[in-house]
Image (cartoon, rainbow, N blue to C red; front, top):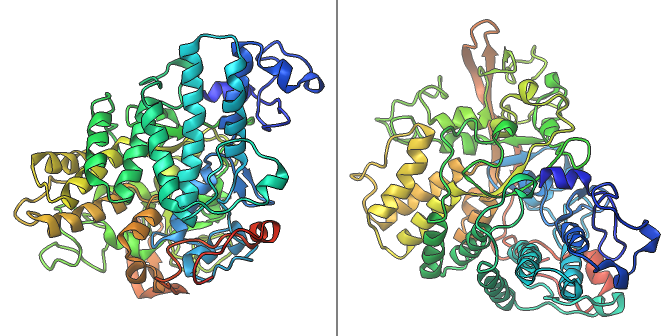
Length: 536
């Protein structure tokens, strides 16, 4: 599908969908009409790819069905990350200062994809083509629409549920549908389409929506909404579809290993035509980057020691003056920390004499970088601002941890729970779960929540976990800290800490308001029938 996205550049006016004349022998753009479009399977496929069309619009802070920007930056709304530039759209979400009229926020209240999918679904039946394939196409469009409703209902709560194309006048008079009804619609859609979607694709079709994607998203929603029994059943089905953990956690996210056995759903990118430019915002100024997204000390401290003990355990062997030694290997794979060899030199964000000093322009304000997607920057990318790196939306490790969580919440503690968590830990180079420490619902709940945080760090899921566990006042309140200051030996990488942890910002969290985002005031100005979320 990466190849196909690269070829699709033609915009169909109603949907703003993308395709290119040299991919299909097509009429000129000005010859298109709704009556002439649906004449062949190729037409239907072109319109379907319009539903997949994504991309980030910086002028409006809006995106397509899913993008690199919305995945990577969402962790800045959590305790995992700090977004240092307010105009990039997430700082105000993270520190609790967002308002409905805030123009410096990234908006996910977006019906563009939904309208494209509605238009496709209303018209594709007229196409003379194989009926089984047509149902598959419709299933893909229904998934993309359902995914958009998942995101919006998760962030805003009640949202207008619109399942047909409507006029601008009608759109400006819709009201918000109760979130329970929206979620019910999503789950029913995903259940239905899972029966018509293929388990896998090959060739240039890789990246399209599969049965596993539909069921994994359905199970995620059921988990989030507390329907644990249904979630377990769906996760078990997904676990039987042939997915497996990629052998190397450190290499899982590299561009050369895309579309591997662990990926269930991703957004496909292609250099030049539909490029992912976010690696450039993650790296430091000495590499030409912006350091836009800065991991916090809190996420660094969440990683266990490599013996399976937490750093606050006196018997763990943790040394605060040598804090990165003997840690969970996922720490080194996910975060560039002071003294780590990165891009040919030892990263030094803690010494004022270094070009990467935390307090200088375009350098990480926490002293840490998100390494997961930029681990081999110069080796993997000719131009870090123009890459074909796919963005993973759902992967098999999430399925395993979510299955374990659902079983734990029902207090169904059996070997399958340990097996699922162990598989994720062992792949990363960690020991299996210590059954003498984690032996009941309370202790296993603590473990699986920590495991989710470190395994899925910077993948856009941490905020959803905070939201559903209702821990915002515990983890997103107060000072945000980064590394301690000191020096790094440029020859050996040895770190000497001589100062305190840097303070990055002060955050506030109102549990009566901040679990939902405000409905954009611009939407209410257009449609006064829309109500605002409580507290805004």
